[in-house]
Image (cartoon, rainbow, N blue to C red):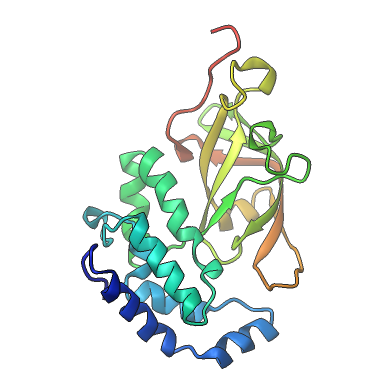
Length: 237
């Protein structure tokens, strides 16, 4: 179980004990099968480690970034691979900082209980790379829906998650004062999206990282899935 925020040694001991149940042979087998360590991630979730950053009011441990870093560090130190699950840590910050209370109430307790996974973030694109402000994926408001079109690449753990955080442009680049304006964040229900216009194409890679290319073709998602306020600062405002 997770101990107090200041007891880093207690966190380290707990992670090491859990990792001891998954020896090197387990991780080598997963790698050889080009698989995903489902049992390992489930064990981390069951003991509360994947809910470290979720506030106690929503069923989590309410720890900070330092403690989350200690958890990830000890997974790697003990022979595991934090890359299989670290997305659920950094995605929490986005949801906690920008999400509405309704979104937090709907998702965070279920994530903390292990009923849902939020481990994927759709940002990088094939033609813009790390120049995030120039991304070309668009989300256009049509009534109570947003229609998304575009492409993402090197997006991890899509098929191992239930929800994804997606960054898209809601105001054209030539209509904003700053390049960072006009970008919005959305919660995407992955299974629903795959049935309505999102194609997931796994990318084979040497390190067996669950990585994908995504294609959005008139994907409609509810307007309520917008996280935070939509960026609409125009060039003339």
